[in-house]
Length: 179
Ligand SMILES: C[S@@+](CC[C@H](N)C(=O)[O-])C[C@H]1O[C@@H](n2cnc3c(N)ncnc32)[C@H](O)[C@@H]1O
Image 1 (cartoon, rainbow, N blue to C red):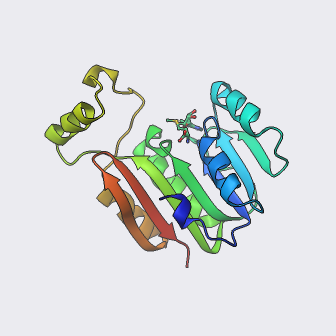
Image 2: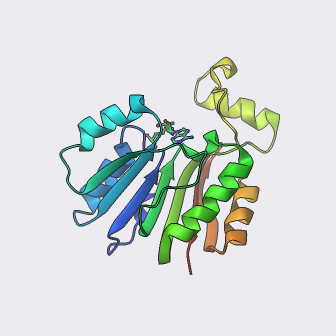
C-alpha cells in the first residue's frame, strides 16, 4: 500500500530509519530508475542494509541520528519511513515532519507507515493480544502518538491531501503531498 503512493516518475527517494533496507529494496525493485537514500543511526541495522543494497549504485546509506535535523542530502520526490519515527520524542517527530516537507520537491509525497498510539488502554492491550505478544515485550523506546495529532501536524506544516490511508489497530499509513 505504501508503494502505491510512490509516483511512477519519482527519481529520488529518502527512507528514514531504513533498518536493513527492506523497504528501499522493495521500492528499488519496483522503480528501476529511482535513486534511494536510506538513513539510520544503527550500525547493527546498516550492516545488513549494506549487504542487501551495497552493490546497488543507485542506493546510498547514510549514518545519521534522526534526533538532530536531517543532513543536506538534496531534494526528493518521495520520503518514506516504516516503523521508525515513533522512536523519536513527540516534539522531534513534529519538527522532522517539517524537515521532510522542506526536502520534498513540489508535488512530492511523504508516506509514513507507522506504529501509532491506540485511542484507549484497552485497545492497546487488544493490539498486543492481536499480534500475540505479551505487553512486557513492549519496546521501551516507543513514543507512540495518535493518528489525529500526526495528521494535524502534517497539515500545519503545509502538506496537502493529508490522511490516514490505511490502518489496522496500531499500524497506520499516513500520507501527505507537498503542494
Ligand atoms: C522497527 S525498525 C524498522 C526498520 C525498517 N524501516 C523496516 O521497516 O524494516 C526501526 C528503525 O529505526 C531506526 N531508528 C530508530 N531511532 C532512530 C534515530 N534516532 N535515528 C535514526 N534511525 C533510528 C532503528 O535503528 C531501526 O533500524
